[in-house]
Image (cartoon, rainbow, N blue to C red):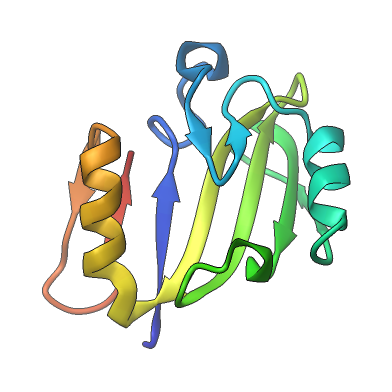
Length: 127
């Protein structure tokens, strides 16, 4: 598989969004930024699509190809909101070859809350 998915949030959706307020992810603030604010900001630079409801948070999801971020190897981004419409998590899909460098960058900036690193297949980290 050429891609992997990196989860960037605090305990991926399951944590209270207000507990992580102040954490910036790709220019959006977890627990603060609303879906409409993010849609408006992203629509200026890229196409935003509705992703339905997230089964864990109960909130809406928005997705984009991630091209507006100019991050090498970024294939797509999914923004996940809670039931109050506040950003609860971000999923970044990237080329597998970019995992190590992106992981090291994020590890310096955020605390790793869980790690599952199989020998083969997808490698997932929760921040």
